Image (cartoon, rainbow, N blue to C red; front, side, top):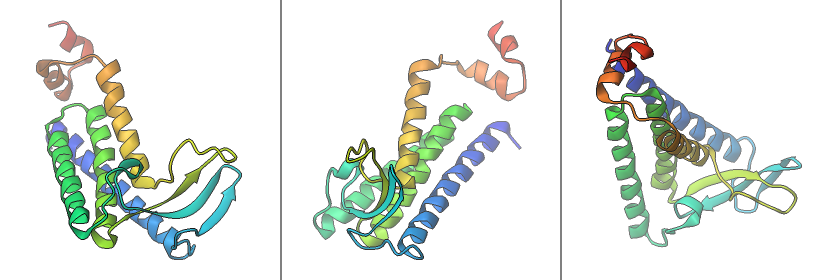
Length: 182
């Protein structure tokens, strides 16, 4: 199998694993744990609770979908973004970039499914220090998207660019210093 195709398929597998983990935990929280209505909370640690919330908007509650039309526009827009991320992932050649994009894709799929089926995204993870909450209530999909974006940004700002020939040499198993000595 082509090494590049293998890396991309690993990226797809990671995206689907994150999607599955997000959906499984949401079902666990709203099912057996019974945290399924606004205001329901389970205190776990002095700094972390499970607290049910419905997010009708996108990141940090922005662009709230107040109507059926807005809901479907949001589903369509986020699905389009997921499609663009998928295409981008299949064009990348380095695993670090593929990894970041797979996290974004997996998280996006988890939240799209909620919004499609329920009209909102289930958020439940409440990290806090006393009354101070450095984050809004979130879910695994939100965390995956955030981590993916941070990976992409870190790679863009701190990793040196590799030209196509160097990447091709690395994919063919040539040592990195051999690719650099050309």
